[in-house]
Image (tube, helix red, strand yellow):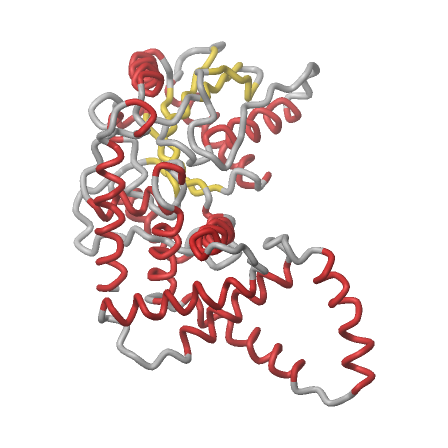
Length: 377
């Protein structure tokens, strides 16, 4: 991982420099500053603060401003996007938070069973905090950095909570987008009746000062910062360094064998009848990189480039050489035919990042659980 760390530091240094820019050049503008003040002002007024983090970066995605503002008994951590993270490492992180006496739960915001369980946990916690009160109204505030899925969780809790209570009326919908910074204001949504519980969806807030280069690169790769502020090619190269240094690509070996078996068939009937439909589909959707057959081709290409590379990847120049060959190979897989080599690289980078962020290229946890188990929340 030494080479991936080297690329991470270079990318992170660039991201941290962007963070210090004023106005449109950075991400922490007047609107985000005002949102941060409004969120922190509400902390003492709500019953429970649910801090939403990205399960791929459980430590790096912490909302630092909450540390000194919220009491531990009214603070809960939700690790969202568990479907994109390494399952065993997510379990270790949940255990770590439990050992720190911190209430924590992992969810996929689009999984109904996950959200129902989260609702039960929130209801139980509110009831515990309201002990002695026969009737009450509870208020829960979701807070966190941009693009961790606060609004997606809000919508799911609102929808399932209203259906469970058999309430009538039009459902509200928080704005959900793969781009960070889409939630502009604090909004309230009802998630339970008898007793009533409301949830506050809040804008994401990321400090302009990130503590270190490694954290900055992880935040950029997982989509906390708009790609337009950081070059997509740099982000894609960092992802490839992470992939090349991991074991994830080995899961795709059977795909390669399946492709090789198909190509080795000599039967004219099988080649013509079996491939005709697939070829027609490929021609029709050749520009849509999310199609299963293209994703499969991407996985096979990445597996072959990594497994056939014989040089020492701990050397930075060798890792760079492998990444360069992967960019070249993926131009064909993604059907990129732009004239400018710079435009081709950008197109490949954008498609590659999309597949990574939607879990089509494996599950990754970039933050490792501290081995000494010291206090790290």
